[in-house]
Image (cartoon, rainbow over all chains, first blue to last red; front, top):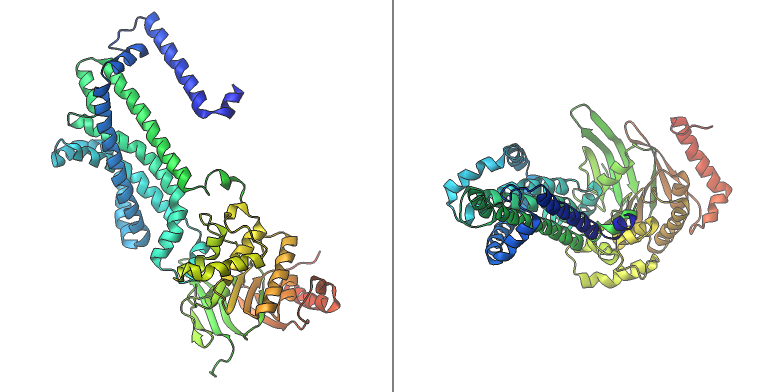
Length: 258
Length: 261
């Protein structure tokens, strides 16, 4: 298997996945597992093919909610981080508060959002935002702070303004750290969207799972879960791809410096 | 106090770093005059405050007491007619070499087109033609430090401050850059303040060597180097050069910074 590790991460993980699915299929038939306990992969596939539009509609809704929550989390999170880095007051109040809030199980707050915002998309976006924002704020603050002091002195020697230092030095330096936060954040936003759909509403993959549970339609729940898995993976790698494009100096080329 | 006539005029400069545990006297009663077109090296052991002195002159560190006057005006913030080269090259990895050289003028709000040709000429002079669109990580340590010298020189500063710029380079690259710097000074006659802990480097480059000692950081001696300019590397083998080096080394041996055998 040595050549696989060298060759292609995607290919090798696909092979492992396919082997697992085959074993699962065989086990279901041999052990005569009842479909509502654990449906065979073939049954899940059939379920998906029978009504693809149904799943596309709900997956699209979940995706939009996730992306909206994530986008808001990035914008608000970065703004908050900039404030925290530049203001001792915000650092002492907002940052401390955020860290404290982060230790609250945020899922527990989800029902409150339904009370406040109703059963439309708003509470779901808000929950996705709330869960995703912490890692983005914390990693962005870390990135903006861990800038080489000499680099700032170099800019100050030309009497750079705070804004110039922020945009020309701090942000580019912080990008790697910001992306680390965003990679965690995108997965959290998806969790938030599903939690929101669990709590209220009539659309989205979370709702599909809940509905299937009520009807013991386990195969349908599995379809939703499979789609969620694929969606989460694609979202994560999309963020990583954007990182590669924006930070060419930080990835492969960076290995042999200094 | 009489009207200062020198280009850089430092009187009674004290710099104290205050912390909760203790106050640290980084610089104590520093008097220093630098005339225009002089090449001054500041030589001293690590922690003697030589970098702090440079930062005070550059307006990057506030002084505790005393006065620092540059060209007749007290230094409160970094002056326009100054260029700095730091110990490490601190090039910005996300900019190509040309844009790194243009960074200082860009911050100062100058039009890019006014400086782009000049930046290219400077890079060429420092043997970096063809590297304009490379990125810092593609260059060797010596080349990177050359780029940072170009960056400091682009706006044609009257005063050039160098904070141990060659400390991290290998001996050959160091010799090479010493020659380059000597030639640059010979041609442009900029006023240079050069921080180093290499005795030979200080003697080779300077018109004057300022010797510092630590705890608190103070100036022990200012030595005129009366070797003719321009100097070639083999000036280092002459007896006069040897005498200067020996004198300076003796100074550090007495201080206990250098120990023989």
